[in-house]
Image (tube, rainbow, N blue to C red; front, side):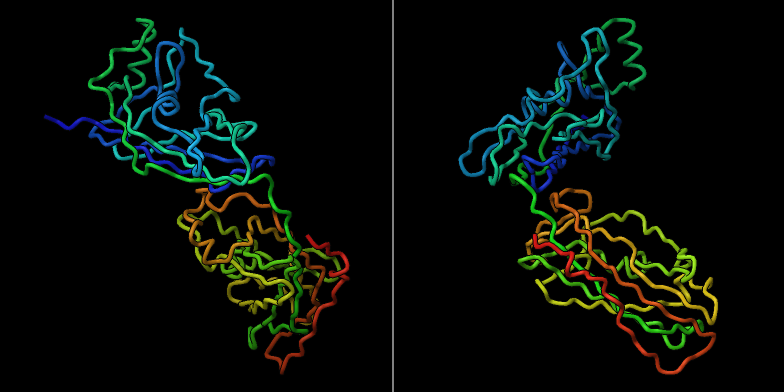
Amino acid sequence: MASQPQLDLRLQADRICCLNHPSRFSLVVFLTLTSKKPVTLIRDASGRYVGVRQTLVSQCIECSDAESGERIPVLDGKHGPQSTISEAECPELMILEPKRSSYITFTTAMSPRNYEFAFDSSELKPDRTYNIQCKPSALGWWSLDSKEKIDEYFKTHGELPPSQSPPLRCEPVNATVRFATRDKIHEAPQVSISLSAPSTMSLSGKPNFEFSLTFISHATSPITVLAERDSVKACNTDLEILDTATRKRVAPDRIDAGNMDGPWLREEFLRLDPGEPHVEHRIFDQLYSGLEELKPHTDYVLRLVDTEWGWWSFDDIDTVMGYAGERGAGRLGPAKVIHPICDEEATFRTLPQEAGPETFRTCRNIDVVRTLVQP
């Protein structure tokens, strides 16, 4: 006898849910089919039919306070959108391919996407930890027929074709995920950047054009920021060279590093102690930096472009790496964006051939510290 198909359920939840901030919290349920053939399921329905969403809400998933055990109804839909599918309409169907995952998302977003459902945080309390548990269950209706064939049957008969049997088993892969609640998000700390660069650049690349950035945090405690400095340095995405007269950008080439997959890496995080300089040494490589537009015996301006650090925490890097996980998994949690301040520029002159020893100049600081406000 051929083995019966099975639906494996894997939970993924954001690490932090902010109760009084319009940040997005999501619980994602990944559905993976163990079968040799595709299976059609009811994704959402109302009335006489029960879909995957209804099964997850009523049978599979429970949220409870990790300390008291009190159950919290976060998926019951009381404060979120209800199904708009009438009993006269064919229920919303979904196709699952063998050994490939689909997913259903529950979110606190004020305007959820049309394929998402409500996660109700109104009864959660701040500064608590909650468990989301997934229990085994079964889907009463499923079919090996194609979606097109099922739609045609519904148009003809006014109902879905009979279900395959027995009911499709749903088994949790990870039985529990945990998240914490916060009443608000910390205000972003101030970070300033100073720039030091040579007064000349040899277009031959000998010697190298070496410069440095110095980061100083004005937070009251050490912070860890997701700065991704390796990728920034590789593409020089934080710098631009301007024509002194026109102030138009002439270099380096604009490079889109694209989106990366996989886990967050330790070197993508930067730890800054209050008031302690963190110096980053850099080199403009003439072969790869798009500097061919520069002309000899010409003055140019080197400056930093506006920079954003989208995530930070008071946790140290070891702690962060313990929960960071995969990119896009939401394990870092929400944070207010840091906008580092750098009001400094460096003017340099290009030389057509090897030059002698370079004289470094420290850039003019345009009253950076005066503009800073302690968080």
